Amino acid sequence: MNNIVEQTSLKYCLYARKSSESDERQAMSIDSQIKEMSDLAKRENIKIVKVVQESYSAKQSGQRPVFTQLLTDIRSGVVNGLLTWAPDRLSRNAGDLGSLVDLMDDKKLVQIRTYSQSFTNTPSEKFMLMILCSQAKLENDNKGENVKRGIRAKCEMGWRPCMPPIGYYNRAMAGIKDVVVDPNRGPFITEMFKHAAKGESGRTIKVWLDGIGATSRKDKPITLSLVYLMLKNPFYYGTFEYPIGSGTWYKGSHVPLITKELFNKAQKKLNCTQKSKWGSKEFPFRRFLTCYSCGSTIVGEEKHKTLKNGKKNKHIYYHCSRQVDNNCKEPYLSEKQLIEALLLISNKLTADKVSMEPGLTKAIQKFRSMLETVNPNKKYTKNETIKNYAKYVLEKGTDFEKTQLIRNLNVKLAVHDRKIVEI
Image (cartoon, rainbow, N blue to C red; front, side, top):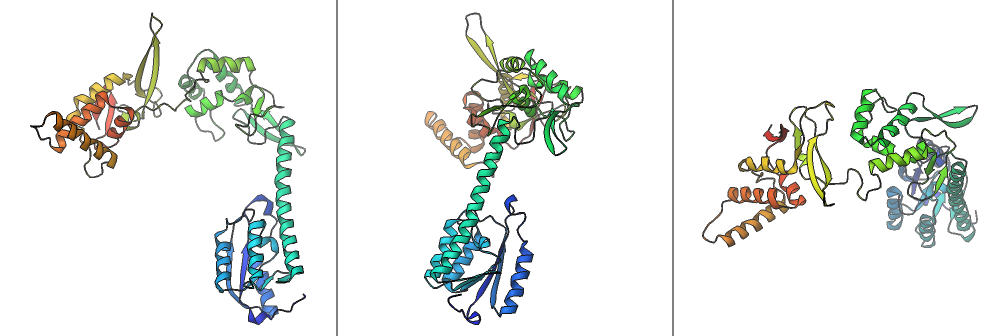
């Protein structure tokens, strides 16, 4: 060293860090860092006033709360020396490194001591510190680029760099990884697309899958949402996009389970190219009703009927989701029938006055003012206002108003034989 630092006059903080990321699997553990540097402090009579540790990556500046507090302690004079296993424990980015060098320039950080080196406020030692930390950053950046390059190469060879979908599994033989058809699940994937190409709905296909005992990798029944995801996955006819949404497509080296023609027929029948995604349509009553017979949730479904004059009529139906019982016999009911059934019990649809949402309270108050403007000689009680508001919303309200009203009701409702019953 060019300068001799009097160790006993300094107050050191022992800082230990280990990232949980894969690029640091070989780094010394936090406990080992603390032990080694504590032993060094005893040998060299270094005064440790504080020991801190954290498990955060040092790739980005300002992302480590313990390190940020450490910088504050140095600025305030709590400590003026750092003890750490190696320079890359302190920084792998230019921002944090610059903060340390600035503190040295301001003479608030007198020394950084690692297991094999010492850095003080001299041009040569600060330069060496910057070189070592910059080298750690360069290694990180190179690793990132190498990983991306490796992924691109793998994709160009036809191998998607992630778990294959149901119907395939990864196999490693003689050190070579391969994607092969799952003999237990591959056949029902092919049949599933054939059913879809014939015009069968996703729900019908799910019932068929449950009937033949088809399961996921975890040996659980295949959910309806997974059925639709599988039916939209081009991996099954031999192509894949990576990363998803990038628009970059590759030809797979795996054995296709279906042809592209079969895939396209299935998409056409399922109407997967429609503007609104499956499951995105909001049905105001579905979350607050259950099936009386089996306890499943009630779901909504929109149907369109083409008239002789070419126009289309839209109809909304509610029915049991059959999550509990696939063979539940509760019949469908239209939204019109549902609203009529709710109106019959509208005198019981009294919102909870204590926990009512502020937005609903404001809407009811506004509605009350409107009623009293129309009928200035009548004063409406709170219960009368709520009942009239409920009737108005059920008959003429927006989907948002209906949803807001129903979720504030203090009764539990179920659908039974096209009627609404309390449970």
